[in-house]
Length: 130
Ligand SMILES: [Zn+2]
Image 1 (cartoon, rainbow, N blue to C red):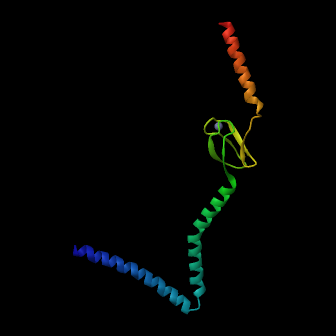
Image 2 (cartoon, helix red, strand yellow):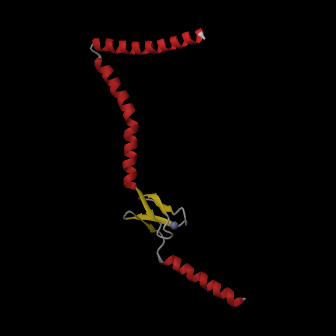
Image 3 (cartoon, protein in one colour):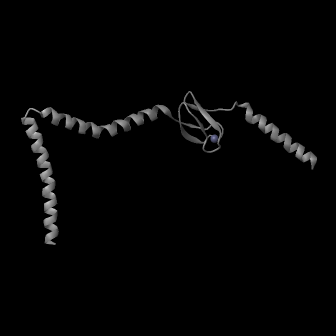
């Protein structure tokens, strides 16, 4: 147990020692008129810390401009899609594109109606053949 405690103490001391060395180097560089190196390192580290936040903010901004939430014009299922892209409705599989911030069907509105007529004609002919 004593060995463990002394090991921990040593680790803590060596950690402190590293920081002390860094601070000493910074002070020495500053004293030697090379404070700009320390400043540039601090600025670099600061940028490194800030960069992910800027990226996240930029992504959110981009998404708010390009992500459009609307309901499917066919089945009125609500979902989000990217502007300037074509997609499929996750509910009914209808190919969609975004027009004026709203989902619009890629296929002309008449297509489905024509299909429906074809189906009904087939059903009638099936029934007459029975
Ligand atoms: Zn749909």
